[in-house]
Length: 526
Image (tube, rainbow, N blue to C red; front, side, top):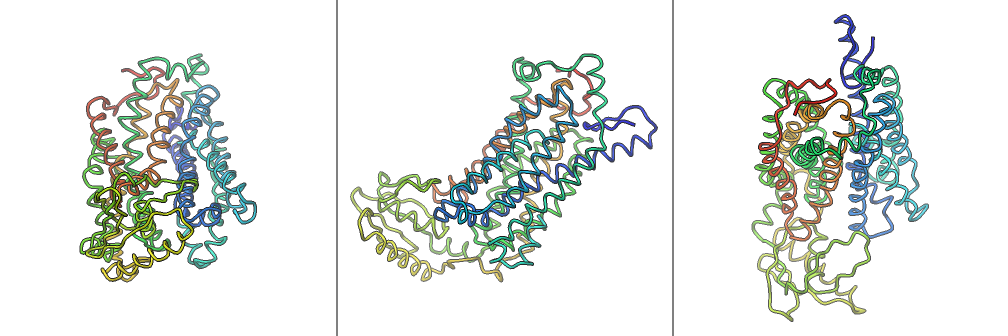
């Protein structure tokens, strides 16, 4: 009996076919779970990684560095797709998968052993980014409860110091299980048939991207499918975590529990929406997810604020914050390397508000006037930096701002746990994640059904990993940068909303319905 990585099986009794198919599904599911587990760790442990690996810079720059290192693993995924996609189309699927999952596991385990900045200096963040890129390269060729348990068992202080390494080290067990199961699989019968008949592609990269009939499908897959799926899924699954912890100041343990609860509820819907796409078609299910996300991201993220930090919402409504300054003196304060200096009174005022993680609006003032922070009816004058008194002036400004915020009803600091409406917060998270399941459920079948068998590995891997890696992987850093520049905690949502809406339109007009296509033909009808 021969099992197929693609999910196909050779002629055999029905019972044997069912057993083989179950083995393929189990192997694929465990492998994918293991590899996404690694990427979830980098996202959910961002604060602990920042405190240990990037402790040589200020905390704000360190967290931005962590987000960019998170994105770095996604940035190299298209290159992994090209390298391993070509190998898979020429050598075979099984052995390519074995290599990618081994690379992924070794890189993840190594992060768990990596010394921090305090031990080896700049070598620590450099090696961390290198391991993230190796993870991304491996995941490009392949299509947590442990965190919460370790956090509560060890306590927050111990977990931040060294306990965050445990989930990375635990990945070694998942790697061994995945390798053991994948060793029982054989090569795809369809690939073996093409090899016997000499029908495999000798140059899958040039055939996939050098011929317009195939390149056109690659572009449609990227902009009409994967782009939307990436931003919808990553906004619901990853950005919600950063929004809860960094913007709404919910403690990490509580935020993890809320995310996990919503994830448990929504996990069966990947299967439900995939099965629904088998009945009514891929496009209706996929496009519904993109459209609903574009329409409801803004109200649902505002609902997160309402239920997770109601004191912040009330304060922003009753005592809005503004920066009154000459626009010519205001800079775009995105400084991931910590080298740029922002010395104008506008920049110093904005930095003080950003440090508190609060919304503000920009109000133009007359040139030559120092910037002011206005909290409700209280005005605080900023100052131009660049003198020996900057430290004392900054301390005085922050103290005045803290008093103004307290007098105006703001609760500065972590969200009050007793004020968090946990059931409603989980319900909002479920709605956000459901949009992702609607796009993720049918997309694998959509991509497989678009491309001919002879170049499928290469042709579908590149648009998938460009879309996921670049549009999705950079979503947290991009959305935070937009929000910081505008001064609105919701402004960054325009990034996923605009791309989801564009993907919906492109898919509706240009992408054909693929349900019912024979995926085992070497040349797909167009």
